[in-house]
Image 1 (tube, rainbow, N blue to C red):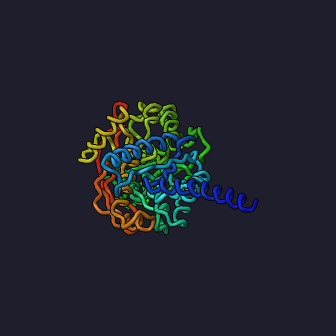
Image 2: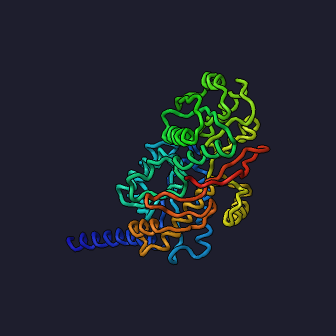
Image 3: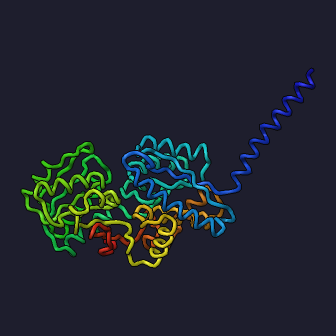
Length: 381
């Protein structure tokens, strides 16, 4: 009786070990990378567009044999456009899936939340599009392949002052949003230094949808340009209500938060001739941009958004770093990321600086004939 029990226990132990070993062998078959994105919720187009770019990078990398002889496998988690979910999903990807590195998020608030977990866990994270300065500050494991709000605010101010030759500007921004308020402040600081005048600045709450009062106040100050560094969802309403308030012409300049086909669908006519700083435009004159554009069109039968291009670059750069790393472990990948120089991406050539930010050109996009078109490129001073 005793021997039978021992035999049964031994068989059970072997079965458990076999299952466990099966899982272990699977882990060596590929390289697991986590991606947490807003695949649902109010910012879902940001997440899905970014995912499309990541998927193209995965497809191209694996078609060439993968990295270090192994295929790349990206595990996606939907953070539902919330910071709480972002933190939870990053924790799952690290603890449950044992990913070697992370991609995401787009929104700065969610990159800050998820980046805290990644940094504490010492797993490198690359955000494709989070521009708030705080995203990488003091976090040795958090990197970005996009410009910062300080950089795009500086470029936007120079574009308005030097290129558009406008000297009087009104500013309308989301008061309690890290991205919007940070970009507004960066723009105003540089614009004033250049000799421009901020005739009025107004901050609104995230929950607000009626901007008529703000727009009437702004109109009374007779600005030459209205700088609105908000997201496309709000900008559609701002543009429509501005027209109703009698604000006509190409009055608006914004930031990369405008970059969505939904902006064109909702307010292309009202925003005709307006400009915004961005990471990419389909007709940007960079060699690797054309290659990316052709590949994206072939796969998805449409033009990519800037977020798709950013997702592609972030993933491609991360896979390149994994390939250059001394071993496929988080610390080695982090070290390789810090050594990235002159990486040739769809959104321009970039170098990772000592603060883990990207030095790269910034695109100015014009809304023209219901399309996003390349207008200019500038480097932050």
